Image 1 (cartoon, helix red, strand yellow):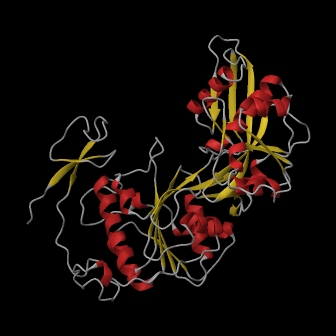
Image 2: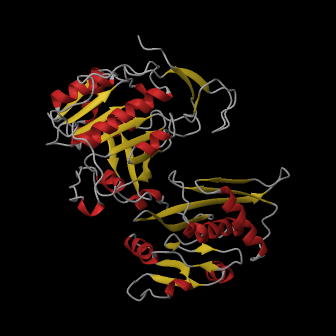
Image 3: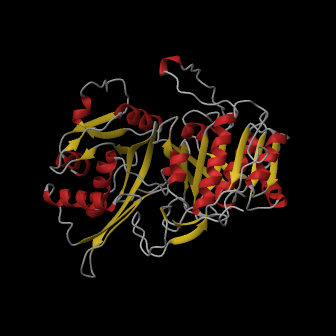
Length: 459
């Protein structure tokens, strides 16, 4: 009988130690080390994954890179255009995609919706959290049925691979990786060693068979993906499903992608019949209002290759409780403080005694510096109580010297504004270099200083 071997693992970051220690030297957390059994059982030929191919028996040998043959693989194009965009143009065969998000945000709904929409491809949906009846109930609500989607409620990886041999799926979905356990590791499901081992087995299956694998992952209370950090390093793509459960819109964001851009973004609307793709998010991010209100401006920003026009809302009022408040939602609070300092120092506006509340409508979190001018215009509109015309938008960065700086891909921003019916856009005059602005019918106001912009807006 083999001697049982144990080790201690940090449940926060996955660091390993031969003995228990109070504070993790890797992440600095206290009392996170748990003893786990790491002695593996003897692996028999029937206990590992096999699909009848000889690729698992071929010994790997080093080759010169010039001798390696390469053919570009055809991506799997789904009916979900938002998912195709976020993945970089479709699902890559043999890739492993990890999707995480808050509980109840809609991860399982999204993955089941994808499984039901892939007609012509055999999809195996493995659930360790729900019964077959619960999944069927959700499928009925989604009103999408296909004979090529198979449901398996199982948590043991060895049993899952046996069913894979029978079904031979072309797409595999695991819900979720924290519920799986391998018989080779004598630790509880969801532990660091189990998550690492199960992911390694699924990764081996994906690479050797060429089958794309989707993993649904839990997140911690801090908003990070649960399990060891190596989990994110092992997979090819990491997607984050975001949004407020009390709002209808969801955002699918890429944080890692070996086959495409990491700045792409997909937007969905949660409805009773499932998730609906939002092809033109600018129309839903800009509120339809009949009366003109102060403190509202429209900024032209970019998320990946997609231009968006979003609404910036500000409320500036005298601070009656001593220290002025600076509160921002969806916008970096430190950058808001910097812009307020620029307005006071360079523009002469006395905002030091004012409470300033800033909100990006629609629940988006924006980091594009091209939104700076829209934020400044919104704040001054509320401060002066003078509304900005609803057909005016902004696309420029603001520097510490009060200069209006150029932004990249300004033509895409102007085209989106023109398409949505805006008549005026304020940009930096330095964007005129190398860009033909005469082809646009929209009125383009190009300035180099903040005071020039505000003189044109407010007189």
